[in-house]
Length: 285
Image (tube, rainbow, N blue to C red; front, side, top):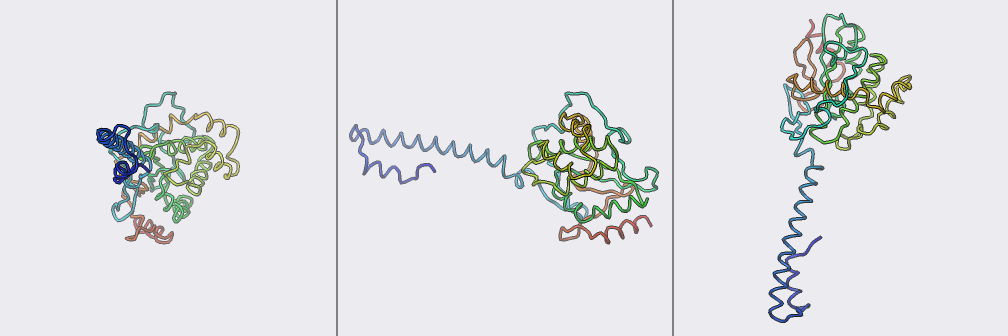
């Protein structure tokens, strides 16, 4: 725990110096230097802990956006994670992507309306929304009301450190390579089993494979090998980099035909499934 200010008193009364009166002054000076050194070490350790642990204060801000709630991107991050760095391996694009190869479309691609979903697999507020409204969001895609375009981020790897966001996205790419339905089921399973964002649980390949094991038919040899080999990691980095140019400032963000939706009430609670469905129907008209 280090020395206290009273330590020098015990030095005077209980432990006389070998050098007599002159030694007492030397001992006190040495004690002061030692205390200063220990104080510096404690401050260095505290600063390290603050950077690594006190994430909610220094790295993330939960704020209201357009009447909703989102996890804000920390644009001040000084270090690039694997999500934003230049891929060192060739980009292998999974099958079933759309647009420029960074968009994942679920539902009828010819649907008249489009729901754009911006999210991060490591985002706890995305999980909160998915847990409440995920089935309602999917139902309106399944009945043809709209198609869903997924735009997936990995900014939490920058904000928190680690690689869970981009590794989960790479594993989702392996699922997408098999089918859009496999992607969607794995997408839902990732949120249902999401670890605390501070733990970087999805940075562990075995954790991702364990989640995939809950999706019937997903854990083929091809899928497992692709996850273990990081086959789609460069693609995931590309997808995350594209998100960073979208202008979206927090997740989850949903836009219907380009108009941002309000997903949470004034208390920060997600809309009920019925409220979400009614909002979509009203906006479509």
